[in-house]
Image (cartoon, rainbow, N blue to C red; front, side, top):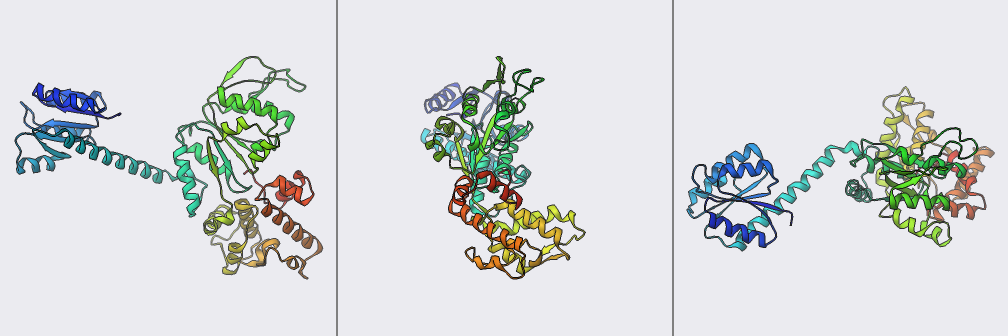
Length: 457
């Protein structure tokens, strides 16, 4: 075990016996025959626990406890002596000793004290880490939550951030996948390096390989100079591959090599480039279904899916809606001349009942829309977008044919209702929802973007 114990005793035979016994139980052991030698060890080595004799020529065990306060007060000192008395024990403990053992000692009793110290040290260490996480909440800036589901996810983020493990973030569009990826990066040791987001679906398939891995001059028509790709730029940092389910198979092969060997060649190049990049990927698609359809490599999936985080949709964390509304009001109130903006009880009630097929991005869009249109500091139901203005059942088609609505408004309401139903039926899978609606996935994405329901993840 990686625990170092310093045994301090001027009697060589006693010191050797105890040291030997501790070594046989798996501890790293240092020895000292005086307080001065003990302090020298502490200055040069990592020491977890000190077992020190009380009576020694020159400085005593209690002197050692006092001097350690100036050097490293976190080292626990256990005093050992044949001169047991209540007064001596109380004095040692008052000066800061952890415990008191009388000679002749029983090794099992000594180890029991050691284990108590180690348990205490572990608890102190865990509390220190938690305190640092609370004090550095800015590392998770952008994540606003009171949800138990999200708190568990943030716990995973805190633990996974310190590693280099690849992370696959799953969830519907608008749930905050890129925000979470940024949180992982800025809570990691790579926080001072670049975070490079790439939307794999937004880039032209013919240019995607060049964007990711770069190209050499003259490697294809229009390649007038050498180009560094996103992986090269992200060296020592983090790259976030959003919409990973849209990655073409031939690029998946090259990505797999980067994950396995941390190297690649630019398009049209022969020189191997080595990189140290943390990969975080995200998708709203069912990767396992894509694997069955032959559209996604199974070996790449396992490389990306070392740690899996599934973000819940906003309808499953409704306790966060009021917190998010307050956040978005603060973000957009500068667009208005009204400094004390708030939603009326009736408007807030509608927002709480709505199911948000576009998740957090849709809520943000609604708040921004309402702030821009509001005439007063209190945002009323009349300021809300038409699609959610009146609280109604999602299955109530008649609500789309309100007499006060124009034809374009009625058509839009009906379209939104059908898209909303399709997304619910397919658990937010846009590809499957488009098939259900009889339109192309590009057409569906256009509508979602037009309504403010689509974001980068």
